[in-house]
Image (cartoon, rainbow, N blue to C red; front, side):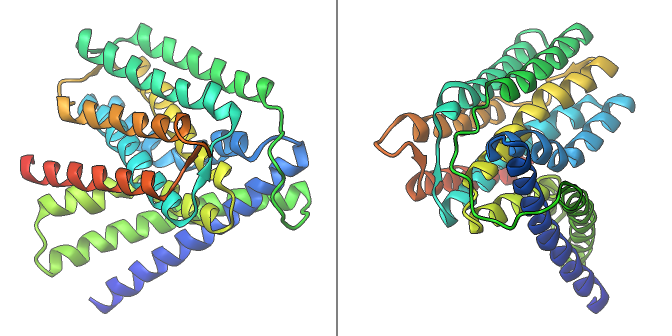
Length: 310
């Protein structure tokens, strides 16, 4: 038991330090290449923190288990917005840029609706639709870099060499992945040893396991006042999960949406509508602490519903 607790603490330490390295390295790369921290969060950080979802979903597709691939993406995207963005904005409200308003939030909402529309009306995603998702993903990344004006105010930070910045990003991603796995595996063992039910473990620890890199990275970004990097990480991870991960999984093996219930889809759409509401209303165009409280309340209600229906 003591060894398990020590491994949990070691996993948490790796996650925290990994997130710190990743945020510093990503910010340094943004300054070095003259692009906005949002785009770096959307691409480098978003891709890196989505790797656990990638592994779980692609493995599920290869093994012919579409429920794992689709359920993992839907659950992670809900958690990314309601829990992770909610906690991040609770620590430090996140300003919404003009690019976010015109491009990033509408695109994320659009691909969410596209995924649910194709998945439910067609019974799932075919290989052709998987290829379409991959093409849309490539187009969105190209558009993001091409349209990025890098007009966001540069956050203060140490000037680092490109080699050191890349080393920080890679080291941060390794520490995040290893620490997250170490934390989840040992937390599950500890919970079972003290008599916590498997159903509760599934709804909480296992559901949040693949989202831990995004959670740690966004919280560290919020503490360092790099809200655009955090927002880019969340929206980028959601776009990655839908277009790249589901696209690749569906190309390998057509995916069924039979396991996605109406409540799952409704909460997923609601999560993006809350972001849009935060962005398009009020004078400040930001995700503030009131918006964060709404997101966290919605996440708590969803987890309670899951706990009752599992």
